[in-house]
Each structure stands twice: as C-alpha cells, then as structure tokens.
Length: 85
Image (cartoon, rainbow, N blue to C red; front, side, top):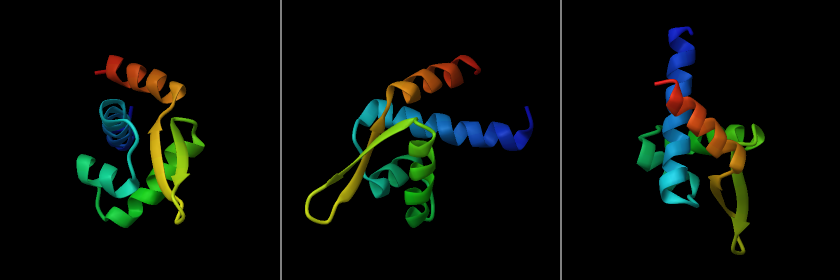
C-alpha cells in the first residue's frame, strides 16, 4: 500500500471511529473531534463518505442542518480497517 493510501485510510478510520463512538454529528462537530481543517472542508469529506455508503445522513430543523452517523457498511469498513493495523 502506498504512503498516500495509508494516510487516506487513516483519516477514514479516524472518521468512522468518531461516528462509532459519538453517534450523530454535524460536520463542524466531527471536524473538531478529528482535527480536520479547514472546518468548511468537512462538508465535502463527509459527503464523500456518505456517497460511498459509509455514513447515514439527515437534515434537521428549518435550516436543514446536516447530521451524519455510521451506516452498517461503515461499521463493516471500520472493522476491516482496524483489522489491518
């Protein structure tokens, strides 16, 4: 595995682990937990994970504040990533 792939998988593993531990999170909350900067980029990264099927997504309130949580596929991927340590 290339160093770049390893780094990408580390961010993915850290991200999925945060959702596993915390449950539903808004992008800025997640960004602070995993130290992802700039915070505004968290929306794009979490959308990427959602499109891969690793996260669930829902909008809340009048403004449709997005929240994400770990999907069953995300739990499976987290187990696999953890087993590769």
